[in-house]
Image 1 (spheres, rainbow, N blue to C red):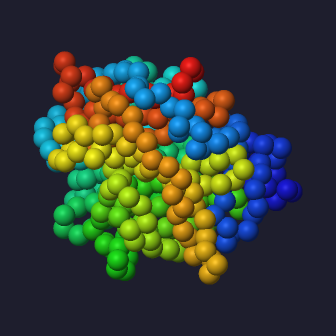
Image 2 (tube, helix red, strand yellow; image 1 turned 120 degrees about the vertical axis):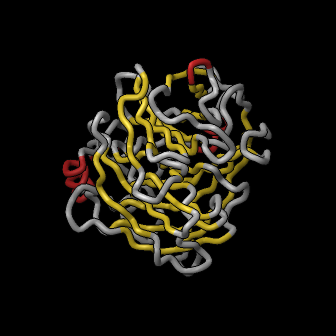
Length: 337
């Protein structure tokens, strides 16, 4: 507990009384926080019941996307959405394909800044934020992919923290594919990063060598590759920490094809565990659908944990087709909240 208390002070996490879970790095357990912090996400008391209790239909909101090149077809559309833990309103990071302006940071008054993609990488995929750190995967048909971590402490001036080059990943993974990412802080303070390959039919699992993502010497080491571990061809994925330390991978997708066609908007979720040999396994925990009026999980969806530990689901429309390039997104909360 003294180690966790020191770590919480260094990272700006919740006090030690809000922490729980073993620190054995061989166990896939999350660092538990019930308070807002810049370096960790809040926990959910019960992931299964939280997802089951989500309203089947969302509440629609919108923002204006003028000033950014328009999204104009099947392969140029929104790819990821993640809410940031800022208390003065709903702040979103939204990724897209087909433009150098890969990510937009959207505040209550609209787009406040944009992130430029690395040269030659025009596809930014499914994203997730860990506190003020945003993970963005990039890929290109030419066979290259990267994952970049950005510091969004100053939303008007995003700053790159780290670049993970995936040019040497072995089969069954593929160097040119990184369609979605998910990340969480482990019980020992390090960070686990899961990269979805070919819509998460393959999952590459990385773990950081240190807790501080802004300190020199940061590296992420590939520790596992899982093939055919999930169903549904995830468009987006998130890691969620339960308040007992359990980690869950939640994937979202639309089962229509191609992407703009409105099939069913689906969630599948899995508990991270390990077998007798110590290898990571994903235990299926559930599947359900919700109904979008404007959004499409074939574009993007993402999860956020609110101040009371409530799980909130976000989805966004396929592209900017509203009046004057209005973009609609929807928020799914627990019934009665």
